[in-house]
Length: 260
Ligand code: COA
Image (cartoon, rainbow, N blue to C red; front, side, top):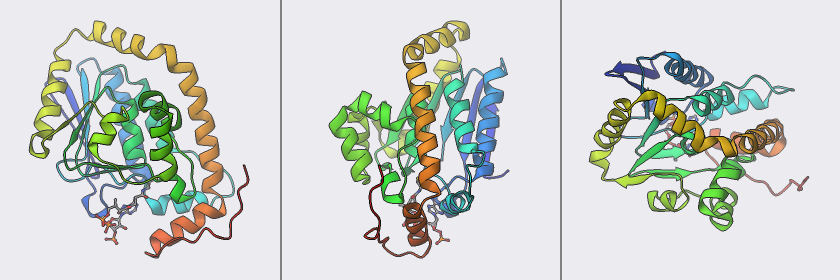
């Protein structure tokens, strides 16, 4: 797996997404590799912090749209490595830092909601385009964005589904801080290294306490999101959206009727 590069140095595990010709779009194999890297980090005492990055140009354009099509073509839900990856991220007891430059689309934005520190470069572009793909939000975003940024901002980001700036991501509670693009990786790495030097037991307990009150609610919400996302992915609206992306044309949703 050359598209996910995992390196360990001085207690810090760095997981780098490296598929630049496809804007770091995530395939099933890439999610599986990232999930493995996180699970191993969780249980390896010498790894004390994790950094997730797509490098200096692009974080990730989200789920590989071709993989969406393959999943949508199945008659029933198939195992989802994306879901397993998000579970591994949420369950990681070590601090997780993300460094975001360029595009962070779809799960590229929603995975950030489960990191502990998120540094965004000034050139970062966020988007949760689920509705425009005939899908619904995933990764807890329909709960967490409203909780952190308020209902009206969540409506705007998840129903309009347009690209938004690092300043808006800050307002939505998706990023910790925005830094000059050239400083991104050094800033995120410095924070991750500081975290790696802290007492690991105290840090793990603090992380658990910070999250546990909301855990059951978030877990139930994510289960519903994934079920609805899977059903929509097998439906005609997503088929039209994916075909339009692949054919490089505008989608036409005029023939569809609301079913909720
Ligand atoms: N899945 C598969 N391929 C993708 C991809 C994705 N999510 N995102 C980009 N690519 C591919 C493009 O098809 C293109 O491939 P090609 O060179 O073989 O034609 C290549 O990566 C470069 O993308 P391009 O669209 O030319 O780059 P851009 O800078 O103009 O735009 C994005 C970048 C991210 C805005 C745009 O690619 C995009 O909207 N991608 C889809 C994002 C998406 O809907 N993700 C799913 C989220 S749920």
